[in-house]
Length: 155
Ligand SMILES: Nc1ncnc2c1ncn2[C@@H]1O[C@H](COP(=O)(O)OP(=O)(O)O)[C@@H](O)[C@H]1O
Ligand SMILES: [Mg+2]
Image 1: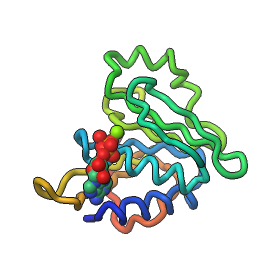
Image 2: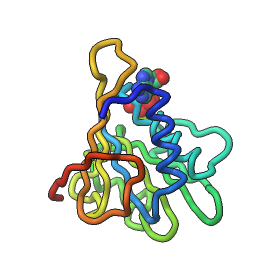
Image 3: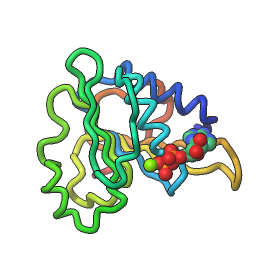
Image 4: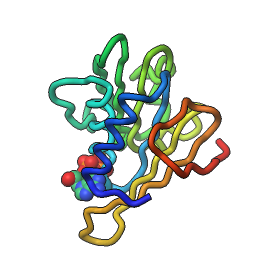
Protein backbone atom coordinates (compact mmCIF):
# COMPACT_ATOMS: atom_id res chain seq x y z
CA UNK A 1 0.00 0.00 0.00
CA UNK A 2 1.04 3.62 -0.48
CA UNK A 3 0.62 6.01 2.44
CA UNK A 4 1.15 9.69 3.16
CA UNK A 5 2.88 10.63 6.41
CA UNK A 6 -0.46 11.28 8.09
CA UNK A 7 -1.68 7.86 7.00
CA UNK A 8 1.48 6.17 8.29
CA UNK A 9 0.94 7.86 11.64
CA UNK A 10 -2.73 6.87 11.74
CA UNK A 11 -1.90 3.27 10.88
CA UNK A 12 0.84 3.15 13.50
CA UNK A 13 -1.43 4.51 16.20
CA UNK A 14 -4.02 1.92 15.34
CA UNK A 15 -1.41 -0.83 15.63
CA UNK A 16 -0.40 0.52 19.03
CA UNK A 17 -4.00 0.58 20.21
CA UNK A 18 -5.09 -2.80 18.91
CA UNK A 19 -2.24 -5.23 18.39
CA UNK A 20 -1.98 -8.25 20.67
CA UNK A 21 1.17 -8.85 22.69
CA UNK A 22 3.84 -9.95 22.77
CA UNK A 23 4.51 -8.80 19.24
CA UNK A 24 7.71 -8.16 17.33
CA UNK A 25 7.78 -5.65 14.47
CA UNK A 26 10.87 -5.44 12.30
CA UNK A 27 10.84 -2.07 10.53
CA UNK A 28 13.02 -1.95 7.43
CA UNK A 29 13.96 0.72 4.95
CA UNK A 30 16.68 3.20 4.12
CA UNK A 31 17.58 6.24 6.24
CA UNK A 32 14.69 8.68 6.08
CA UNK A 33 12.18 6.08 4.93
CA UNK A 34 9.98 6.73 7.96
CA UNK A 35 10.85 3.86 10.30
CA UNK A 36 11.02 6.10 13.36
CA UNK A 37 7.86 7.96 12.35
CA UNK A 38 6.01 4.63 12.30
CA UNK A 39 7.59 3.39 15.52
CA UNK A 40 6.68 6.61 17.37
CA UNK A 41 3.11 6.40 16.16
CA UNK A 42 2.81 2.83 17.40
CA UNK A 43 4.21 3.89 20.77
CA UNK A 44 1.74 6.79 20.98
CA UNK A 45 -1.13 4.47 20.12
CA UNK A 46 0.04 2.15 22.88
CA UNK A 47 -0.28 5.02 25.36
CA UNK A 48 3.31 6.25 25.61
CA UNK A 49 3.45 9.93 26.61
CA UNK A 50 6.40 12.28 26.43
CA UNK A 51 9.44 12.33 24.18
CA UNK A 52 10.30 9.32 22.02
CA UNK A 53 13.82 10.03 20.78
CA UNK A 54 15.55 7.91 18.17
CA UNK A 55 17.48 5.11 19.87
CA UNK A 56 20.38 5.39 17.45
CA UNK A 57 23.06 5.81 20.11
CA UNK A 58 21.45 3.86 22.92
CA UNK A 59 20.23 1.03 20.68
CA UNK A 60 17.21 0.50 22.96
CA UNK A 61 14.56 2.57 24.73
CA UNK A 62 11.79 1.10 26.86
CA UNK A 63 8.52 2.89 27.62
CA UNK A 64 5.49 2.23 29.77
CA UNK A 65 2.24 2.28 27.83
CA UNK A 66 -1.37 1.88 28.87
CA UNK A 67 -2.26 -0.77 31.45
CA UNK A 68 0.78 -3.00 31.86
CA UNK A 69 1.87 -2.65 28.25
CA UNK A 70 5.52 -1.95 27.53
CA UNK A 71 6.93 -0.58 24.32
CA UNK A 72 10.52 -1.41 23.39
CA UNK A 73 12.05 0.56 20.53
CA UNK A 74 15.41 -0.48 19.12
CA UNK A 75 17.56 0.85 16.32
CA UNK A 76 20.31 -1.57 15.34
CA UNK A 77 21.90 0.67 12.72
CA UNK A 78 25.09 0.93 14.75
CA UNK A 79 25.22 -2.71 15.72
CA UNK A 80 28.44 -4.12 14.31
CA UNK A 81 28.02 -7.73 15.35
CA UNK A 82 24.87 -9.67 16.35
CA UNK A 83 26.90 -10.83 19.37
CA UNK A 84 26.46 -7.33 20.83
CA UNK A 85 22.74 -8.01 21.19
CA UNK A 86 23.56 -10.05 24.24
CA UNK A 87 24.56 -6.83 26.06
CA UNK A 88 21.18 -5.19 25.58
CA UNK A 89 19.18 -8.16 26.81
CA UNK A 90 17.90 -9.20 23.38
CA UNK A 91 17.09 -12.73 24.53
CA UNK A 92 14.63 -11.40 27.12
CA UNK A 93 12.64 -9.33 24.63
CA UNK A 94 9.26 -10.24 23.26
CA UNK A 95 7.68 -11.84 26.29
CA UNK A 96 4.66 -10.70 28.27
CA UNK A 97 2.85 -7.51 27.32
CA UNK A 98 5.50 -6.08 25.05
CA UNK A 99 5.44 -4.39 21.69
CA UNK A 100 8.99 -4.73 20.39
CA UNK A 101 9.91 -2.59 17.39
CA UNK A 102 13.28 -2.89 15.72
CA UNK A 103 14.68 -0.57 13.11
CA UNK A 104 17.39 -2.21 10.97
CA UNK A 105 16.30 -5.70 12.07
CA UNK A 106 18.52 -7.22 9.38
CA UNK A 107 21.49 -6.35 11.62
CA UNK A 108 20.29 -9.03 14.05
CA UNK A 109 20.81 -11.72 11.43
CA UNK A 110 19.58 -15.14 12.50
CA UNK A 111 18.64 -13.85 15.95
CA UNK A 112 15.34 -12.43 14.81
CA UNK A 113 12.39 -14.15 16.48
CA UNK A 114 10.55 -16.86 14.57
CA UNK A 115 7.20 -15.09 14.86
CA UNK A 116 7.21 -11.51 13.64
CA UNK A 117 6.04 -8.89 11.20
CA UNK A 118 8.50 -7.46 8.72
CA UNK A 119 7.40 -4.01 7.59
CA UNK A 120 9.33 -2.41 4.77
CA UNK A 121 9.04 1.29 3.95
CA UNK A 122 10.41 2.93 0.85
CA UNK A 123 10.09 6.34 -0.74
CA UNK A 124 7.69 6.15 -3.67
CA UNK A 125 9.76 8.50 -5.82
CA UNK A 126 12.52 11.02 -5.06
CA UNK A 127 11.19 13.93 -3.01
CA UNK A 128 7.83 12.27 -2.45
CA UNK A 129 5.97 12.27 0.84
CA UNK A 130 4.37 8.99 -0.02
CA UNK A 131 5.79 5.69 1.11
CA UNK A 132 5.39 2.22 -0.29
CA UNK A 133 4.67 -0.14 2.60
CA UNK A 134 5.18 -3.87 2.25
CA UNK A 135 4.32 -6.22 5.07
CA UNK A 136 5.45 -9.80 5.44
CA UNK A 137 4.27 -12.18 8.09
CA UNK A 138 6.92 -14.58 9.40
CA UNK A 139 5.69 -17.48 11.52
CA UNK A 140 2.53 -16.79 13.50
CA UNK A 141 2.63 -13.36 15.12
CA UNK A 142 -0.55 -11.74 16.51
CA UNK A 143 -2.87 -10.13 13.98
CA UNK A 144 -1.58 -6.82 12.59
CA UNK A 145 -4.47 -4.35 12.56
CA UNK A 146 -5.27 -2.29 9.52
CA UNK A 147 -3.20 -3.99 6.89
CA UNK A 148 -5.16 -5.48 4.04
CA UNK A 149 -2.45 -7.32 2.12
CA UNK A 150 0.14 -9.45 3.87
CA UNK A 151 2.61 -11.76 2.23
CA UNK A 152 4.18 -14.88 3.67
CA UNK A 153 7.91 -15.00 4.18
CA UNK A 154 9.69 -18.06 5.43
CA UNK A 155 12.05 -17.28 8.29
N1 LIG B 1 4.69 9.01 4.20
C1 LIG B 1 5.66 9.25 5.11
N2 LIG B 1 5.84 8.38 6.15
C2 LIG B 1 6.83 8.61 7.05
N3 LIG B 1 7.66 9.66 7.04
C3 LIG B 1 7.52 10.55 6.04
C4 LIG B 1 6.53 10.39 5.05
N4 LIG B 1 6.62 11.41 4.18
C5 LIG B 1 7.61 12.18 4.62
N5 LIG B 1 8.18 11.68 5.74
C6 LIG B 1 9.32 12.30 6.43
O1 LIG B 1 10.42 11.43 6.28
C7 LIG B 1 11.24 11.47 7.45
C8 LIG B 1 11.37 10.06 8.02
O2 LIG B 1 12.28 10.11 9.10
P1 LIG B 1 12.52 8.89 10.06
O3 LIG B 1 11.22 8.29 10.47
O4 LIG B 1 13.43 9.37 11.14
O5 LIG B 1 13.30 7.88 9.09
P2 LIG B 1 14.08 6.55 9.46
O6 LIG B 1 13.80 6.20 10.88
O7 LIG B 1 13.56 5.52 8.49
O8 LIG B 1 15.53 6.86 9.17
C9 LIG B 1 10.58 12.43 8.42
O9 LIG B 1 11.20 13.68 8.28
C10 LIG B 1 9.14 12.50 7.93
O10 LIG B 1 8.55 13.74 8.22
MG1 LIG C 1 15.05 5.86 12.53
